[in-house]
Structure formats: C-alpha cells, structure tokens
Length: 312
Ligand code: R5P
Image 1 (cartoon, protein in one colour):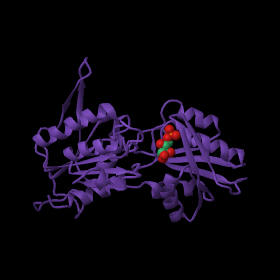
Image 2 (tube, protein in one colour):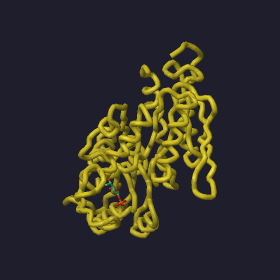
Image 3 (spheres, helix red, strand yellow):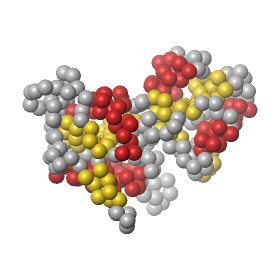
Image 4 (cartoon, protein in one colour):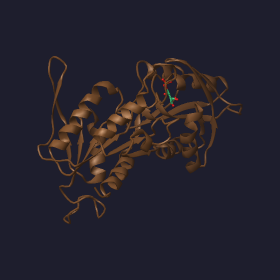
C-alpha cells in the first residue's frame, strides 16, 4: 500500500485505496459501517427493466480494495445482482473484493439429508469463493462444516458473532435475565452472551417436524417468576421461539423476551410472537427490521479493517 493521508486512523487504508459499496435497502447499516471504517461509501445503483432484469451501475473508477455489503436474506434475486456487481467491480479496478454479508443464506443445507438433495451450502460457498477474496458474515449456521474457511474454499472466510453485543443489550434491559437457548446449536451464542454478563442459561432440545412446526423441550428448572430471554441466531418463521415461549409461560415465567442476531421474521412471525405474550423482540441490524436494537457495524468494521491490512 502506498503511503499517504489515512482515512481510518493509522490502521486504515490510504485515502482512495478502499471503498464500500452497498445497496439502497441496506443503506442505514452501510452508513454506520462506512463511518466506523472511515471509508467512502457509494451505492450500487439498480434499474429494473419491465421484464425483471436489472442494470447495475457502479462508480466508474474503483480503488484496489472494495467491500460490498450485502445481506443475503431473501437471497435468490440478490445473488444474481451480487455476482454481477462483483464481476463489474473487477473490471472497474478492484483487485481485491470482500463480501460483508451480515446474514449468509443457504447455510442450513450442509449435507444431502435425503438422496438427491443439492448441498446448497457447498455450492453457494464455491460461488462466493469465485467472486470474492474474503467473505465476512455474522453467526452463520455452521454445523457439520465448522468454519467459514471451509465454506469458501481457498479464500478468507470470517465468522463473527453478535452474541456478546446482544448479551450486553439484554443484560442492561433485564439485569436478572435467565437466558434460554431454544436448541443445542444455539448454546454457543447463549453461552457467550451469558458468560460475559454473568447470567445463567439453559439449553433446550428441538425437534423440527416441518417448516412451521417445531417442538422445543426446555430442561427441568425453576422458571416461575423468572424473567426469561430466548436467544437464537435467527428467527425465520418464528415458530421455534413461539413454541419455546408457550412452554416458558406455561411454566410460570414472569416475562419472555426474545433476542436474535438475524431477525428475518417472515410472514406472521411478529404477530404470532406478540399474541403468545412475548414482551420485547430484539434483533441486530444485520437484517433491517423494526426490532433492530444493536448494530453489527463495529463488528463488520473491525473485520474489514483487518482484511484491508493484509497484503494482496
Ligand atoms: C435453526 O436451528 C436456527 O438456529 C433457528 O432456530 C431456526 O432457523 C429458526 O427458524 P424458525 O423461526 O422458522 O423456527
């Protein structure tokens, strides 16, 4: 990297050497991120043709390092645009590309659960590895494939966690909270949040019977009168949280709040959670939603600042 005036303190890239690109529907997070990094922010401009195709426009001259912010909730249409934006960015001068995808889709299908099922995680990972030198995400749903480096073979994969941030938030709101993981995979996040705040936690077991049908078994514990916070990586249909809430309330919990990194909350999820008696619904801004209360911008900024310091 050439010497010169810095835009992000002594650890930042020289002016003109890095840029953040983002789409209009994630602009608030993009502004927070650009401000934390001290990098210029430019939009990926989109024009939708009547037949459903999209024309993209990027700044005509790009610096050597470009990061694209793109959350991959509702991913199918976004993936085409992202692929085009990455390819276009290289033609316009970017030599190193990072994808900051706060929510990374298609992580659940990490094996063929029945013969003939396409292992989406593997193929999406390979696709992203072709387009980006670095892929950064938050609380990805990794199970049998344990690391992001494996998801994006040959590239830098970074998995951040918002659990400590959520832990700080919920401990400030509910100082005596009992944290509950709705399934065993959520133990990692609940344990991280609880550890830092000195809170206690329980880990439930979950049986999924269908897209909108789950059974959550909460272990024996005195719940009567407790202020409980359910903490998970993602709420999609909300049925996991809903089933857990019904049990918690049935066992006398004084209040049930929910906190998730990625608030997808599809369909009637929020309405159903409110009807079930959930008091507060909190999420990070990894997915734009009315429940956002904690920003992941500092996490992403640190990861991008680390990336930009690496040699090409
Ligand atoms: C899966 O195990 C995840 O951690 C979540 O618990 C799950 O994706 C939530 O899905 P839903 O909100 O549709 O129950």
